[in-house]
Figure 1 (cartoon, rainbow, N blue to C red):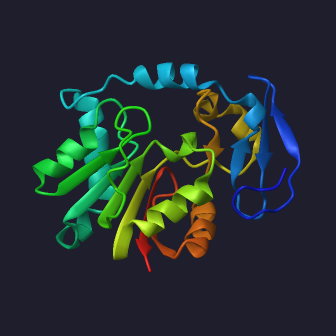
Figure 2 (cartoon, helix red, strand yellow):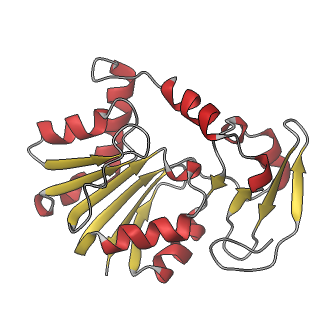
Length: 213
């Protein structure tokens, strides 16, 4: 198996708790699950349907407000149009952004499957707790690059792993059966170079902001 981002040859390791096989790239620090360990699409959808958060869910709203403030709030004067990529069953973030006067489209492969972003470019694309579910991160970054205006932004939320296998095997985040890809700030630098972005900032925990070159 080669790395899905930098194509380096890799060797597998096993998470004994779940009996899942993963690959760890020391070049770009990307970790991904062996596709033979993926759940089927029916079980994947059931897992997503358990996320029943709405605009009335105060904790969920607070999470997104913190995400906005921590990642792209300083750049809000430059932002008019937004795509929320992977909105889930309750697109709370898009509603919060509309309340701030932004024009927001949503896309989700299960809950809003129309590819509304086709033939459009945006000032900002957001993707929160989504890319850890995606099998082909390089391809998705190329899609983001295609649909963000020059100078526009890509704001992402996903938990960063510690780049240490003993820690990874104890990590709660990898136990979700639909989580198949895991990133580090360095991984995003490699993806940025490949797809005409630059990393503006990250918090070394879960949030990263990139700018389209």
